[in-house]
Amino acid sequence: MSFEPESLAHDQLASVQAAVSMEPELESSSISVSMVGRSVLLEGYVADYGDREKATAIAALIAGPENVNDRMRDRDEMAYTSPTRE
Image 1 (tube, rainbow, N blue to C red):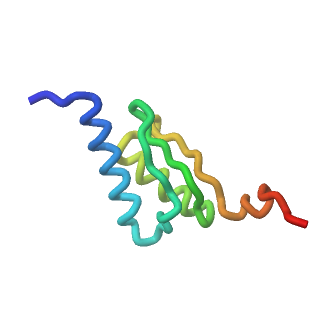
Image 2 (image 1 turned 180 degrees about the vertical axis):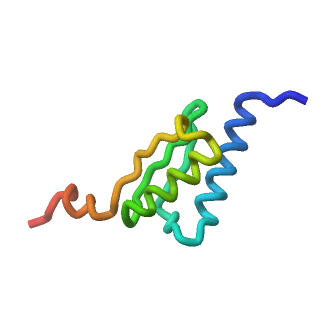
């Protein structure tokens, strides 16, 4: 039995998505997990640095640290980058 790279990527994606969503100490509802080639891409918003660390650590355990791209932002950053209305 041989595995195609696309199949491995799909399995890896499903594994990371499940692990992130099942972590009880991680608010994962605003985190999106996708694959870009062999890399796991984490996007969205986290409550704090601790949640960022948890999410990236989970992905690194499954995909390897060299295959994790963190594009998550802290919710606090939104207050500084959101345009204000007058």
